[in-house]
Image (cartoon, rainbow, N blue to C red; front, side, top):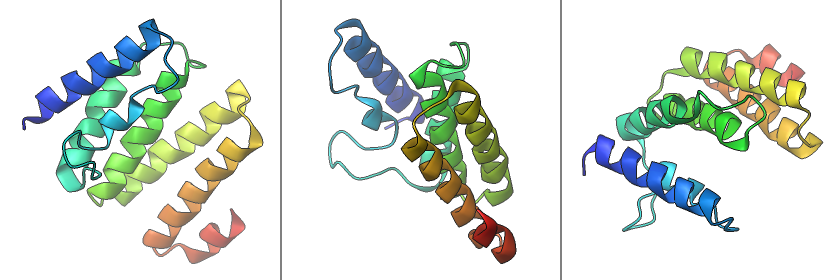
Length: 130
């Protein structure tokens, strides 16, 4: 499938779930194949991360789709081994989550993601300090 088609499909399904107030937000369509249910990886994951971010960037900072899109971009950059770029996105995501006051559990996930990326970069002391 074309990445642009996958992105459009994800965008439509998330929008439909929002419009109909469904419990299943269909967010997984940004990172998981609808046919085989496997996660996308590598450059496909990265391209979908960018498409996701571009889709929701214009929403208010506290809108869940915006900060989830930022997380999706970070995961996509990691999947394509762009670790320094992923770290920048993850740090911005954590800063956003702090500003909007998400529950502590979500903050811990974001901090854990940063620590794991530090580890991938060989920055072990910084990973431990998270």
